[in-house]
Length: 177
Image 1 (tube, rainbow, N blue to C red):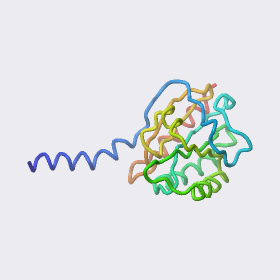
Image 2 (image 1 turned 180 degrees about the horizontal axis):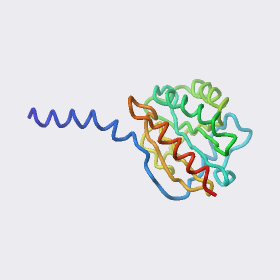
Image 3 (image 1 turned 60 degrees about the vertical axis):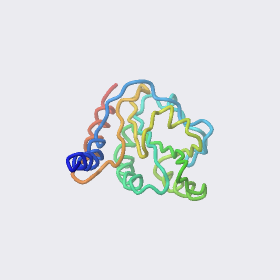
């Protein structure tokens, strides 16, 4: 019984680290939520209209400490890469158990929109379309509108420097024709 408990404890400790990796994916990027409320953009944004740019779609949730930590890295990338063709878009998806009040979500979305536009999606359609398993999750979309990489969870976690790994992938996608 002690052995089973030790194995379960080890899996619990290792699992968050195992999830901290870039996942290579392929396929057309789904649409962004058409019916959501956009903050920081005068009109709904469409992946199809961003061909020729590298796009990060960042699924976040108000009240998440990890999402706030990730926003620091995303803000740095916006200032570093926007002039070279990177666009970052935030998507606030619902959390049906712990959804904050809409004014709190809008306040955070307005703060985030100072850096990048974000959409508040009150349905789970975008989460399903993008196959988001947890929040935060980000997707790197290439210049042709194809999903290429994803990252779930905290970008910088202890010695795991996902920011450096993802920056290398951003550089790779920006160099492609």
